[in-house]
Image (cartoon, rainbow, N blue to C red; front, side, top):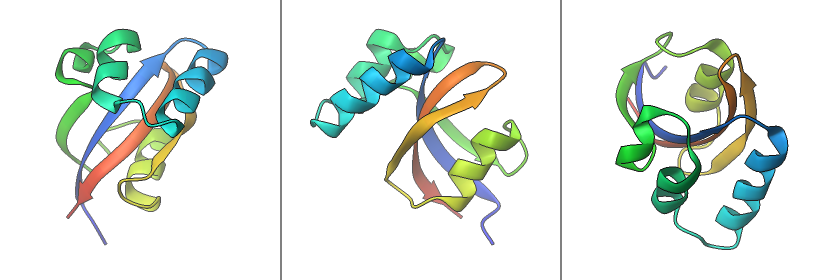
Length: 93
């Protein structure tokens, strides 16, 4: 079972905005550029890159996607207390 992962995300306030961004990603737009443009998280400056983190470091809904869903697929919108996330897991160890 993986204990660490690296992921990037785009955090926005509304489900509707998250769905609009997801549609752009599905049409081939660049994740990093969209993160810089739309994300309200400080990680936006790095294209949404959260770096490497351990299981349990993030809120449960976020962790569940990162540690249970397919690597490199884009998932979302995922609702947490922070807003709505579009998440891509880069790798798991």
